Structures are given as structure tokens and as C-alpha cells.
Amino acid sequence: MGYLGKLSKPYKWAMYLLVGVPIIIMIMLAFTRTLGVDFTGAEFTLDNVTRLNEQVYRQAIRNSLVLSSIATIICFIIGYPVAYMITGLKDKYKWLVLVMVISPMWSNMLLRIIAWEQLFKPNSLLNAIGVSLDLLGTRTAIVIGMVSIYLPFMIFPIFTVLDKMDKSLIEASIDLGASQIQVFTKVIFPLSLSGVASGVMMTFLPSATAFALPERLGGGRILLIGNVIENLFKRVYNYNLGSLLSIVVIVIIFGAMRIINRQEGGLII
Image: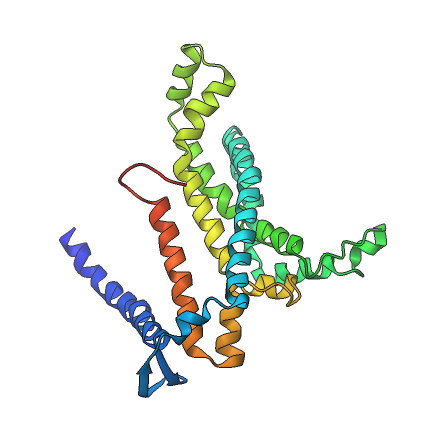
């Protein structure tokens, strides 16, 4: 272990350099008044903190939390039964279904987003069968896009836990007279909560911080926190406020990870 620990040191220093240093710079930008990233003559200020209460930023944060929560719930409702069904298949069919689930991830995410964008337009390929979705620029379009992209991230951790579950516990509960519903609610589901927690984290966090997906499917009308940060950095060049919002997102991410992965006091979802 000592030898392996020495081998890991270069990677640790790389993480400190590539993650820690940018975060320190963002913190400095968030609480100072500068010209771009030039700290010459920088002044400490809390102006950016007070601006977080502006309607556009509160609405963006609200949109991110609400839409990503809805997408995560839908992914769970769809993903858990799919994962449960896959665990009951024979091995040769099990891995075939898993490949079918993962195969969309082999294509570029932006291409899949653009494909949904084309289908959601009033005039699309679906017009050939008399269907016009006309969902572009709506919250429904964004949620559908999130679900289609991040659903595998819900299925796989749940499947992994269910597939490794000790089947003797299920057999013992049946022998003790438990019904199928009781077996699921008292044995299977509680034992699979770690997979559910991982799936929730892997679905909610990228959904909440997405910017390309709401930009394309939202038609620029529905802003998420990722879109606001992108605009501040790339169009407005307000690195100070953009850095502060980025820190808010980082805090939300680490807070969610802390709640889900808390080792003491049980699991909280």
C-alpha cells in the first residue's frame, strides 16, 4: 500500500494543480472587483453576493433545481424497473440488454441533443406520419432531453447493486412467509438504496449544471444556472459574478454528494 501511495502522489499533485488552483482563483474573483482576471489594483467587494438576489439568477437556480429534480424522479421511475428486469434475465440476454442501454452513450451527446431539437420543431420528420410535437423552447423538451441522456446513469448503479445482492436473503424472506410485495419493500429495495443514491447523484448533478441541453432544447427562453454562467464568461465577460455562481454550483454539488454519501447516521436521500 505504501508503494502504491507513492505512485499516486503525481496524480494527487495534478489534481491539486488542475482543480485546487482554479477554485482558489474563482474564490478570489468572486469577492474582488477586477478587470477580467487581472488582479492589479483588485478591491475586496461583496457586490456580487448581493447580485445573487436578482430575479434572473434566482430564476435560473430555481429552474435548474426543479427541472433536474423532475428529470431525476422520472429516471428513477423508469430506471429502477428496467434495472430490476435486467437482473432477472439469463446472462447471455442480460449483457445484450445492457449493451442496448449503453449504446446511445457511444454517440456524441451534442448530436443527440440536436436530434431531439429537430424532432421538437413544428416541422420535423414526424410530419410524415402526421405528428407535430412543437415542444422546442418548453420545459417539457428540456426534461425529455435530460431523461433520454442521463437515464443510463440511473440504470447502471441500480443494476450493479441488484445483481450483486445476496439471493439467499430473498429466499429466506420467502421461506418466512413474506409476500412478493413484502420481499421487495422490506428486503430488495432497502438493500438497493446505495445504488439508488448513486443513480440520483449521477443523474441530478449533471442535469442541474447542464448548459448545452437547455440552450438547444429551451430555445434560449429557459435559463438554467449553466447557461447564466456561460453567458457571464463568454458574452458579458463578468468573470467575478460568473466565478461566484460557479462556486455556488460547486457548493451544491459537494453538498449533494455529502448528503448522499454520508457514512455516519445512515443514508439520506
